Image (cartoon, rainbow over the protein chains, first blue to last red):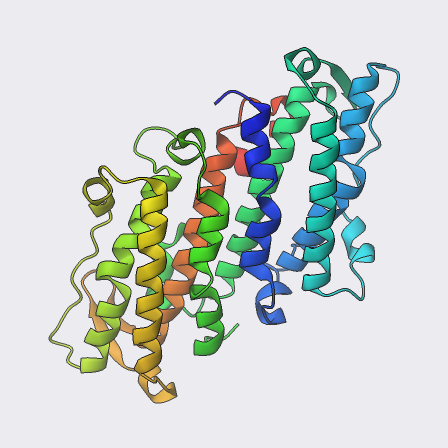
Length: 174
Length: 174
C-alpha cells in the first residue's frame, strides 16, 4: 500500500479513541502490568505515545520542511515517560494524548502538504537520510505497532490462566 | 494475574467499541489487505471473532456447566468466516459482532457464575480436559490477541513506506 496523506490521517485521528475504548477506567491490574523485567506496561506505552506527540512527529516534520540537511533531528528519548508519567493516572495520559494528537493533526492539516513535500529529506541521528513521506508513514505504523503491543501485554496477563489453550495463542508465546 | 470474572468482563464488553474505533468506515485498503498468502486481513479477523460469538464461547460454557465429560466441544471452524462474510461489509460485521457480544455477555451474566463453577471441566476435542475458568480466560486473551493481529496487519501495509524506520519497528518484522 502506497503512502497517502488522507489515508494516513484516517488512522492517526482515530488512535485516541482506540486507546480510550481499550484502556479508560480499567483497574491497574490491566494497565500497569508489563511482560517482565525491562518491558513496558500499557501505561508506559501510552506515556511513550504522548512523548512522541510532544517532541517527535510534528517537530521532525517542521525540520524536514526547512529543507536544511545541516539540521539533524533531536534523538527521541524512549524512556522519557518513566519520569513524565509520574503521579498521573491512565485517564490523565489518555486525556493529554487526545488533546495533543488533535492539536498536531490540526497543525499537519494547516501545513497543506502535497506530493512535492513528501520527498523532502531530513537527517535522522542514527538512520541517516529520511523523507517526509517515510516520517509520516512511520507515525502511522508506530501508532498501530504500539496498540498491538498494548493488547499483547494485556493478553499475557492471562498466560497461565488460559491453561492448555496457550498452545493455540501465538500472542502468548511472543 | 489471576482470573477474575468481573475483570474479564471489563475487557470482553469493550471489544466491540475497540474494533469500531479502529475499523469502522475505513477504506478497504486498510481493512481488506493481509500479510501475504494464507494470512488474514482485519476483515477476516473480525469475521473470525464473529464466528466465535455464534458457535464457541457461550456454547462451550454451557457444555461445561452440564458437567458431563462424555460431551466433547464441537471443533471450532477457523475458516468459517471466508464463507460467512461473503457479500458483507466491515461495518456489517462490526454491527453483528457488537450485537452478539452484548447478547452473550447478558447470557454470561445471567448464569451467575461463582468460584465453584470455574473449576468445572469440559472436554476439548484436541486439548483434552479444560476448566471453565480457562475457557473464559481464553475468551479474553483471544479478543486481545486478535486486536493485536489486526493492528499488526494494518501496520504492515506501510512496511515499505516507512523506509529506514523499518529497522526500529519490530512489528513490521514479525
